[in-house]
Image 1 (cartoon, rainbow over the protein chains, first blue to last red):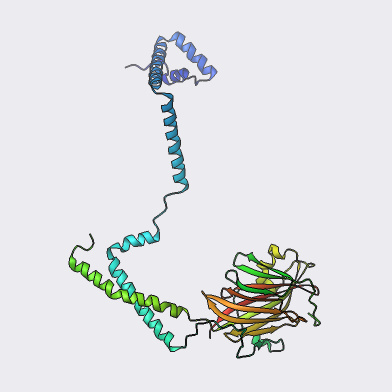
Image 2 (image 1 turned 60 degrees about the horizontal axis):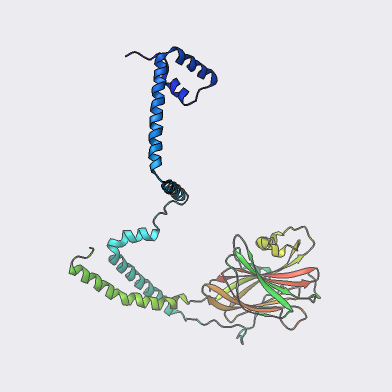
Length: 214
Length: 169
């Protein structure tokens, strides 16, 4: 079989209008001088026409509503894919995995845990019995048996150093009762990175002057 | 199926039946153990002055309050000065009194422990006044911080930072 004296790819591109002006002019010259090329191009045109006509005929059979259904389906699929990309299926929780792993041995494990719990409680109970249980909180403002411990500044500094507290931490204070001896006051909270601090703001119009120096 | 034989089924039932009273008993006993209350707390009372004039620098002694003093609540104040620090040890029925040089008196009492929080009573008395400025009961986390103040005091406003933490009895 002899090779054609033209480039079929070039003719394809010519048909698809993908050539530059000089290339197009070259192909047009070729078509005038080369019957094989002209025949090949005519075949291509016929094939293209047949394919397009076939598609158009098929499309004519499909009602407009069906196109909209198909497009909706495509959109739904795209949306679902996007959602799946954004939120991948979460891994089974630790509890679910534990439950699955323990299912075959649930009763023995539960029994062992119960035995361990009973032993721990009995062991702790022994220690609790040794000391007197002091459960009810005592309000110190009632007749206190002892006088308040006066932390006077005249005491040795060493005594103050006995109290070593870490950096403040924890949540806000829960004010359970408050009596204001001033005209007004308010309670606010300061949200910090480490903790939340409650502030009791006392608004006293009368300057509180101290005779002592600061 | 997991337990096909009747023997295994009976064995499992018997084990649970024997252990159930133990579990119920532990549920009854555990709260009693958990009720072991705090007996002693150590408290640090830090009295400091805030003023409208100042360079905004928080002194090293008040660095532990940096986050609070930089909050919008204190935006009106640019000067911060430590006045005094007092340490107290409180026990149940053993309140402590911080008598400050400024004349203020802060009485603190340990009321107990509720849900792992310290329950405290604070009573702040200003110099020359019979009635306390504020008298409050509050619950707070171990080593939690409470700020009380805002009372005018000569050159600015005085605040008290109260921090209490559990101590081994």
